[in-house]
Length: 171
Ligand SMILES: [Zn+2]
Image 1 (cartoon, rainbow, N blue to C red):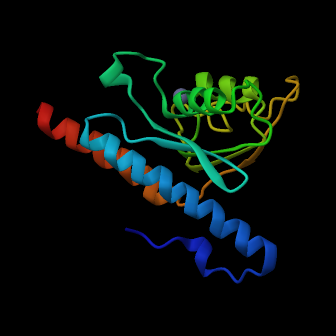
Image 2: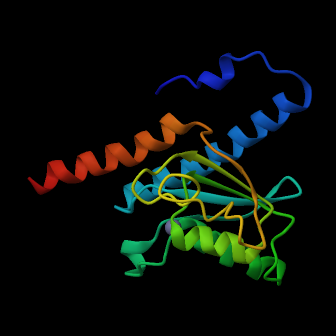
């Protein structure tokens, strides 16, 4: 496990506590992602937080559900909306280990989630700046605040190890 370079910085007050809180929730998402890997799912985890409480938590379930749309973010958004009994999640923050894809970024915009924090960039499918930026598209009527790169190495490592192991068993 690599050390997080952000913890080496000198940080004070509010910035320090926000940073620590973001890391804590990304750690929750990482734990979920690890469980997903054990079930042969691509290890991505997501949690949704409102007023300092996790109200939804999910992992990728594409294999289990045989559903290409069963991504962690989408499942967490559905759970949060169902729990709050409303589609608008404008008082919630979504934490996810990997940059959201086009589908999930679309769902984030539609749900009006206030803030998105993610771990690693996804150069192949990420729509929060890598392939494109749907989350902050100037023409869309909702643009969440985005923070990228929280515990990025750890989040990326989970996915890399997963695919490396898959390639090894398929050889
Ligand atoms: Zn997705």
